[in-house]
Image (cartoon, rainbow, N blue to C red; front, side, top):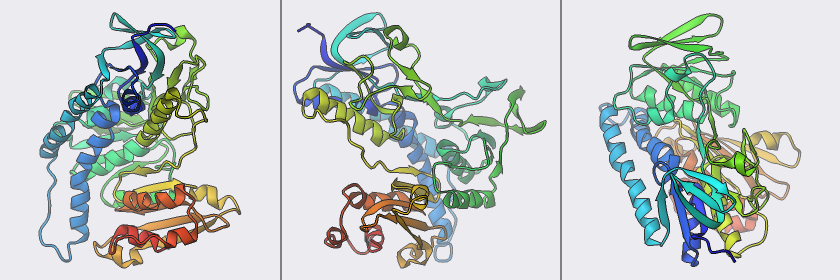
Amino acid sequence: MANYDYDVLFIGAGHGSDGAPLLAKAGYRVAKVEAERVGGTCTNWGCNAKLVLDGPVELTRQQERMQSVVNGNLTPDWAANMRYKHAVIDPLANGLENKFTNLGIDMLHGWATLKDAHTVDIDGTQKTADQIVIATGLHPNQIDVPGTELAHNSKDFLALTDLPDDIVIVGSGYIAMEFATIANQFGANVTVMMHGDRALRKFYQPYAEAIVADLTKRGVQFVPTANVSGFTQDGHRFSVAYGDGQTKTTDWILDATGRVPNVAGYGLDELGIEYDRHGIKVNDHLQTNVSNIFAAGDITDTKYPNLTPSATFQSKYIARFISGETAAPIEDPVIPSVTFTSPRIAEAGVSIAEATASDEYQVVFADLTKDWFRQVDHQHLAQQALVFDRKHHLVGATEMSEQADTAINSLLPAIALQMTPKQIQSIIPLFPSITHEVWKKL
C-alpha cells in the first residue's frame, strides 16, 4: 500500500467536510484544506449571519402584531445589529478550527489544486492522500449584463456597515426574498427585479404570493419579468436598465441571481473529473469518475437540495463508506427546506405540487390563523398543508407561518420514519407548544 500523508483529505472546510470528525475518531489520518474561513459560506457568510440579521425583523414583526396589547414601537438599528453579527459570527471559524485540531485533524490553509488522483498542491506545498473529498461548494452568480461588476453579492450584503437608503435586488429566490425582508424592515426602499412572474418558485405559490403581497404592502416594489439588461454608475448613484428601455436609479445593487459550482482552478479538468453547470458528477456512493475521489455538498450534481443538512448528510455518508461502516448506496433522506422571510415558508417530504398531481395522496389544508395557539401572538398569515398517503402515513408537510421552521421540524420524525397513525398517537408532545398543535392534526 502506498505511503500517503493522509488517509482522507477534504478540499474545503465547510459542511461538505462534516464527515471528517467521524474518520478522525475512527483512527484515520485526516486533513482539511481551506482557502478562506473554516466553516465555509453557511457559517461565515450565509445561514448563520443571515439569521442574526433576521432576529430584529422577527422581534419587530411580533411587536407589530401585538400592538393592541403592547405599548410603544421598536426601531431596529442596522449598525448595532451588524456589530452584533460580527460578535456572534466572527469567532465561529476559529472555534471550529480548534475543535477539528483537537480531534487530530490537520487544518491546512491555502488554495488546493489536484495534481493527480492522490496529490494536492496547496500554494506550492504538496500533500498526498489515499482518498480525497471535494467539498468546494458554490459561489454567487454574476448576471451576464454590461456593468455587472457594479452589482454586489450576498456576501457583500451581510457585511454592510451602513444600510443604503435605496436597494435594487435582482432575483426573487431565497436570497433575494430574505434580504428584501430584512432591508425593508430596517428602513431601506427595496425594489425586487424578478426574472419571471413568480417569487420563491420552489415553494407552494399561494404561500409565496401571500408573502409578496405582504411585502408589497410594506413598500417593497416588485417588477415581474424585469429583463434586467445592464448597470451604470453616475457618481455615488447607480442605474439599472430593465424592461423596454426603463431605468431605476438606486444607491446599491444586489445580484441575487443564484449560485454556481466552485469548479474552476482545482485541477478537475486536468484530472478528467466530470462536471457540468450543475456540479460534479457522482455515483450513488458519491464517487466521481475517479473512484478514490469523492464529492460532497453543494458542489455535487445530485437530486439533493443545496442546503447545509444535505452537505452534512453526504459528508457523513462518505465517512461511513470509507471506514467500511456501510457499503450500501447513499439513502434518500427527507431534507426539509425553509425561506427565512416573515412569515417563513418551510416544507419537507412530498410537496403540495407533487401530491395534487397524483391520486396516491390526500392533501389536507388548514387555516392556522383560526388556531388558538397562533392567535396568542396575533398571526394573520399562517397556513398549512399536510400530505398523507393511502395508508394515512404523513409523507409531506408545507407551512407558512412565523413558526413554520419549528413546525416542520416537529413533523419530521413522522415523515422520515413513515410513522403509522398508531405510532403517532403514542407520542404526547408538551402542552402548550407548537409541536402539540401540529401533531394534533395528524
